[in-house]
Image (tube, rainbow, N blue to C red):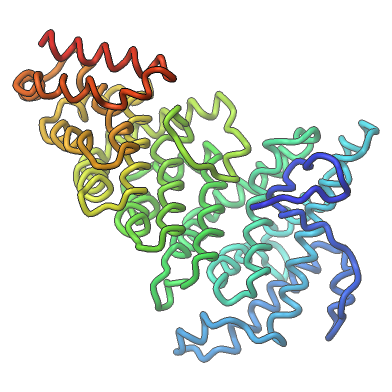
Length: 441
């Protein structure tokens, strides 16, 4: 999302999430909207959002799935949109003001808006239980006005990452952890809503528009910047089947480029545990807030456990046969190769690496990709192929293929991206080493 430098100067922390949305009063006021724009009580705002959302859901016939997902009329959506906009403004304005304070005591003050928001959502006491509001909003994203969809995603993402960055990050860490715990407590219902939101098909589980998918993708990636939530995602094969495999089985293969690209970005985060490699391309706004080193290591160990536990289901039945197949499009194959090379070259994935490179079938697949018509794919395939060659304990079937094809392989590798060698010394050195290793077989 683009950010704007509201008030001049450099971008403020988390302005990229708010989209520069620092607005106040003014504009047309109808039907009580003026009072909403001046509301400062967070629980009142949240209860109003819940009431508006419930009223719109009840207005559709119970057996009419299309009506339940249809966009709201202006009269239905105006109060809900105003309350979501007001909540988003209060959250980001609080952060903007405290970040601009020169007095340290102001910066270290209590983030009351964010804290009240999280506490209200987590509070199960009283008549108005707001615990189900977040999943209800995500499930109904398609019905909301365009701007309101952005507000829902921005609020959710902000509360999950507000302690990752900024000069006042320390005072926001408890708020962020409190919201993380709320998501963890409601993990299945929230993540189910987010994953189902990627479905652009028609029907009750198909939210239908690209912007909804992209918002759900950003929320998915915000969740799994947290090691605790990532651990819940990969803790069992059932969870992986429910919340990870849909990205491989369906979303990454959709013809809509934006949707499939976003799905691959989410898949990259899950399979590499947030690790990036030098060959990675593209960017993601949520990844602007890095995972700390300790959490990165914990996530890498969790990833290694699930990638070897579910090896057949992940690599053989899905990754190779779908994302690296001849039917996969250019972008999907490229990102899949980048994911694969990152996984194989990550130290904690040693067991996964040994199992993958000691496979005759896998080697043949990568050698075919090494001859792809796209130079970018051949380069990414090289970074996977080199792991097969560098493995000192090759099984006989793998070594035989390399030895029997050594002359052709060396001749091909000599010319592979020859123009790149002058500007990339590491690539040139790696290529010479791989060629020498093949010749010595």
